[in-house]
Image 1 (cartoon, rainbow, N blue to C red):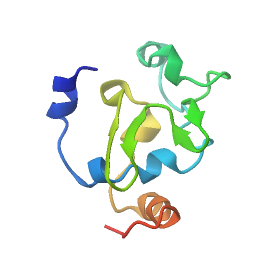
Image 2 (image 1 turned 90 degrees about the vertical axis):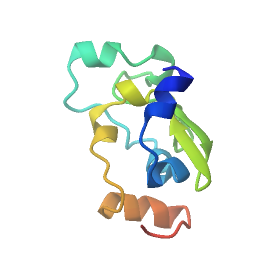
Image 3 (image 1 turned 60 degrees about the vertical axis):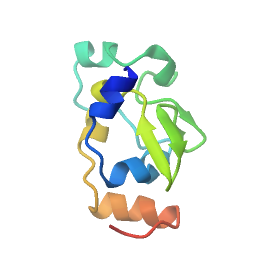
Image 4 (image 1 turned 180 degrees about the vertical axis):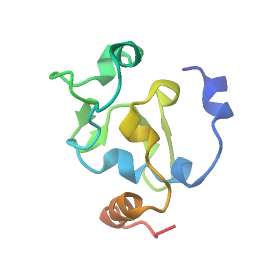
Length: 105
C-alpha cells in the first residue's frame, strides 16, 4: 500500500481511534477469506499459525500510529474480512473504545 492509497481512504472516526485493532491478539482471525485473498496479505503481518493477523501484544502488527490520536492500517486495501465488518459505533467498537478509555462515538 502506498501513501496515496492511504490518502484515498475516507477520513472518519477510525483514523483517530484504532481501538478495535488493539483489542485482543485473538480477535483479528481469518474467517471467510479464500486463499487468493489471504495471499494478498504480506507474510510479515500473518501469525505463525496462519489463522489471523500477527499481533504485538494485543495490537495488530498492521496498525500504525497512536491509539486514540491518529492511526491507519498498513494493509487497508487487503485487510481481512473481520476488519472489513467493523462498524464505527457498533457494540464491538464501543467495547474496544471503553477498554482504551476513549469516548464512545
